[in-house]
Length: 498
Image 1: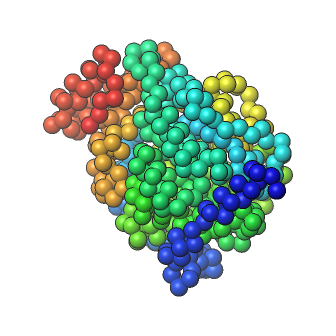
Image 2: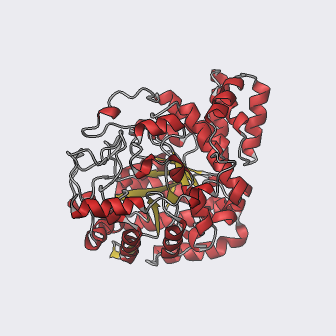
Image 3: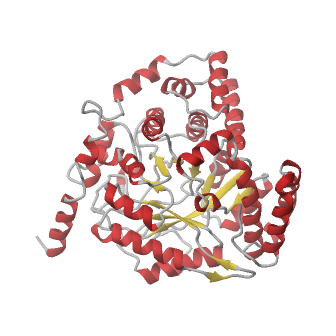
């Protein structure tokens, strides 16, 4: 065995802390009961309008639905009831988040990985993958493009599971991202919020990252179905341990991380089961920590280079079912932020926005080093999967503005302590939307002045005027101060917020 192989094996053997799994179990069992979920789905198949109306009414009070209530919605086939659900989903979204959409970009730090997931282009057995790890200066260059040329304020930094991308590396790259400040047309560009999508970590490591300033910590379970999970994740890998991954968010909460993000990879197993798993997961977090999922993501399985598993998946999710599961998640976990990514094509993303989506990426590139390399074609040997939507941030914002949605670059809540249990209270009462409306307008003004094309400005300015008029009439007590902030930003100041 070579030196690197020995080092990798030693590192892998130290990763999983059994005591940080067993402490959360009940009678030796985790909170996902496969047979119980299947039973709930089978017994809740009524198409009764009164029952569905009552469930929707509960969603509109921003309460997390029960497993039975979620199953009722998942099983609806009646077209009129589906339309009623979709209308309610948008109402829930607007009640909690107003008409804002948050944008971000993924930044892949490495495609080094010790796992061998059957569906992933980065799996260790994929010899066609061009392996790369970004050094500090490369991270700075990537960030300069994202913050200085495109205008992003939020990133999701994506890390594989490898000893070269351990907690030390995550801390170092976070500091590199936050250090970047780039002069723009009228002000400066900088990243104000870095969320991370990373491997499951121990409590001690999560405490370090919390202190280093991570935003939302994402770990996707991929599928909650135990047997399917085992079939696509080899048992001799770290990711083969279902429960180590399942309790990632519990450890994060215990470590003091304010916000956590759940997700599954739809297409690995029956989509209804995995939606139930997401509901069960957020309910268990609420029960133990009084805080549910800050965000839920729902990527669909996409083709990947030299990855046969992705070519003809048994549980492929149709577009209609995909839109239905988005609707159900919006109603079942009404407080959560919902993320749709550039895995999906532009048509599906546009339709999903109308079902309650709150966040989306744009100008997306997922090859390691691909922003500063400035290559435009998708290169399967460098990417985890193929993208469905490669539109620029400017193009996406223009479309959103035409739909009546304001793009928010606000990160103020995280810096003002509106996180964790505090943000949950504000979201459930609709209070957070008031702060966010003010800050959305201020940050949108920034972005339009610093980055927008003339075409996008023409579409966006009338929307901005309407938003300002809403603030004037809905929040007269704060309007005068808001107006001062707004004019300071127009005069070149940046990063002002309430």
